[in-house]
Length: 387
Image 1 (cartoon, rainbow, N blue to C red):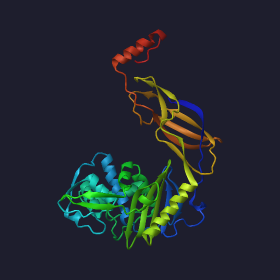
Image 2: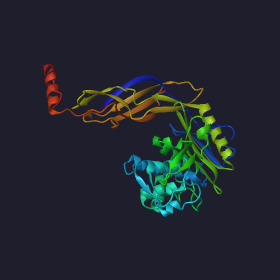
Image 3: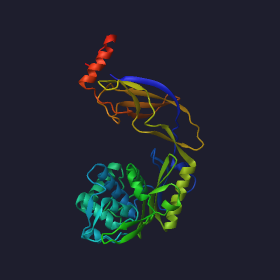
Image 4: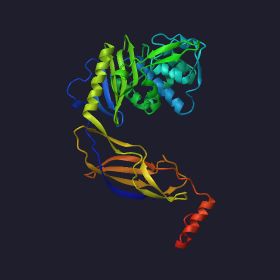
């Protein structure tokens, strides 16, 4: 049986009908295709030829970095792991950090070489580290793209040098960037403007970020530029101001300055027109629920994830309510376990969202002695709590 907790919270919610068609004029006039996305709600704020298949150049490394970060977070790879540079990796042309065959670097050093200097040699070395061969890594890239819904993407290599049948779209790049941002550690690397890579022979390579907006646009902390003769100048960027994070993609600009200009135009529009309203955080209680066999007898119910809505800067904040349905709780339980749902209802009674709820803290199961003491405490009331 489910116990229903129903209560009104006089908080504010607005679900805007945000559409790229509302934008008057071209925010990215120098680019063949472009998109602007609110990273908290995944709402598209602007789009231009966003499904056109184009060469991504080194923006390809967004997917490569995603696979690296997923391997780190799932424990199959560690930042301190050693990577030996192969002849194949050392032979990569284009942008590079001048790795030599037989040298050994830490994963974190190669990741910096990829994120800051767009090192083709570094990304090939990481592809071989993760999958054994570049071919197997590329297969993994394509598989992951399909899983993310990037159905107009096909990779041939992990670095983005021009190759037949190597393409993506602005929309698909935004999806990949959105997923990469679930691993915030990557921003510690993509936000670096300049640094050094220490070589095995004691020398150092000066790394300068190819994304100049990291230095010149307040809030930009990633993600990846790209350039080849076929692709033109491209940039998948992200910036955060207050609680709002945006993702922009521009593809096919004629110069790096025009690439930066279009990106700046998109970000300025997003930040000046919209804001993120934080409705509830994972620290806000939705009510209290009894726990059976737990060291504590009740626990606060909270959202599994922060609930954020995108609104325009000039929009009011109407009231809304939550209807929370929670399963019977039996210890042991861990924070993060999904224990029920929360319906978000507007003033007209329309259900806007159905959210996962969890508990605010871990609840261990009582041992036999704790159970005995609890039962003893409640005997006078004629109630045995733990059986």
